[in-house]
Image (cartoon, rainbow, N blue to C red; front, side, top):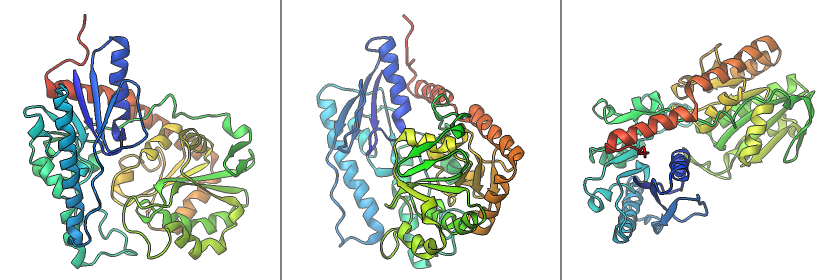
Length: 417
């Protein structure tokens, strides 16, 4: 079968499904041709032909602020259209197009490959009520900015108008879409490699070294992970919980993984959110016990989760992070926020502890209580791993995704000889 994947940051969400198709080729020579169209980057996968299109220019400041995201997506769609024309001119005709709808790349591809089915990733439908907007009273959005939220759905709506096929990874994300659109979007839960992301019972018996941290077995490790340190992932609330935790437990060390850019929400008026929160609470922290690692290697990420004594995961009502799934698979003791983003995964008292997302006192109390309750902690860790084995196995995800491809195309991925 011929595949055209499209994602502006290759390989994006498609690493595992692409690798499974490459594995088909290794078992049966030439089973698939796999082309991946993307903006230029340094990532490569053996067995995948990467084709790049020119990154679109930044939208003109003269454009209305609410139209800039749409303008950028339109330009990216135009660039991807031209890239697809070149692919077609070289004789490649896909049996299916698979890509993320969020950046507009796919919108014009039916004009290049008419009749070719599209499986698009529908990540999130923005709403002005019952979701991330005005969830946190500390960062209110005035009514004069609500139009910008509706404007963010322009690409969503155009993508749905293609009347193709869609997938999304959680029930919560699926529920954000209008009722009339939900039947077009299949829920296929994303998974993790349970053989790589697994508990390590021996890790607490030796010294663990990551970056400038050397952690002895007698210390307790509190972990926090986000792509970037920002309010959308509860970074401000977590930082405000730390003084009480550190003052109450001299044996606690804190690991914070994440960059200083902005993934979601707005930037502070000056500096980054790490600077802002350190200015607010830094004088109340023993900085020798708080380690900011920035972005770490995947191996170090898993090591920190395996060594963690309590892992705090917070989020506005938005998209769940891959790190939450990995923490469950590792068997972390998770203190999670009470938004549907998190509670779809964390069931209070079964595989973690659920606390009010914006209440730093509740978070610090929950962490301190569980550090003193080894029996409960052991139960919750086992519950986390059990949940992952039942719901987050990458093999099950791949099986469902592959079945969806076969359903959409009417073709078998691997034809018996």
